[in-house]
Image (cartoon, rainbow, N blue to C red; front, side, top):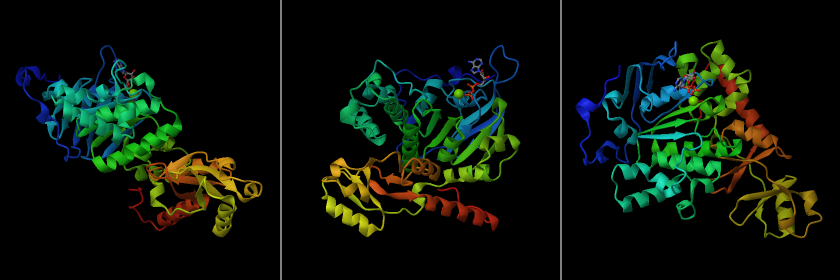
Length: 410
Ligand code: ADP
Ligand code: MG
């Protein structure tokens, strides 16, 4: 039975607990699960059976496996929303079962599907929840709320005073992440946080998380049933079978190249070669260029720029440099303004996107080029099918020569 914290470590009323929150410059801490089991009352088999794993400080570890395999149960034992039946869990060497559960949870960010926001509180109040609980003063909280909203890409002035129902699903998820990060916890638990949003928004939120994590280096435990998401986000992935049995725990590259058994291979799927595109980011491959111009540009000037570029088409942007439409030379023959010609650019990818996402994006474009945008949505180049083919054949050559390492895209 887990020991209760109430006898030895009951918190003293009025005591400041601010010191339990790690200071801003501390990155993540190690989490160790040792023989952790959860048996729900009235069930014959344990939902989680003797799971042992070490989650290194500052890494993102993704638990991936089919629905019902015990991912959520495993994750929620780390912050004691579910009490383990046996086994031990330590965070930074401290036994979570000896901590006060409420205090423990203030040091662990938690983000779930549908964001789990309080519907009757404003965005600012939602984000301020944990800082308020641990006794920060109003000024510090207000500053932190704005800083966090900014961090997750929401303009504080616009969103601070809105209610969750006034936000899109993707915006709600961003607020959920801002709230989880608000007290700067060393550990972040994320349970299918992007499961309820559309695929494009999902890709953007994943990109944001990667960018955030590159700065923050928290310890993140991320749960998903989507293998591509696991490969994209994880420094390591734990592929789980029934009762959270660990089928393989390794880097995404190793899982894709060398699945531990048939079950994992089945999960990877038949297109492991193509899935290798998931291991590399757009930022890591050469980008191509085309003629680009703001809508206000004269038609003749743009026509000449396209001709000079050696292509049949170029890209029209808004005044902030964000891509709007593809324009073909043939379309310019009859045009008197760039504002009224062209075909809208479909899906775009960011520097954080995977080559797999770039492939999907370019297949949807009539000129088979994917537009790459920077942090503010501005044009930064193009990805072509040739880039992807070259990348895949380079990888094949590398593996044919038996070389390893350096290919997991980070
Ligand atoms: P996952 O997150 O991988 O979908 P869960 O951890 O939610 O899996 O569930 C693992 C198993 O435990 C499932 O068989 C589920 O039905 C069971 N389970 C989950 N929560 C409870 C509960 N509160 N009471 C009883 N059984 C539960
Ligand atoms: Mg679950």
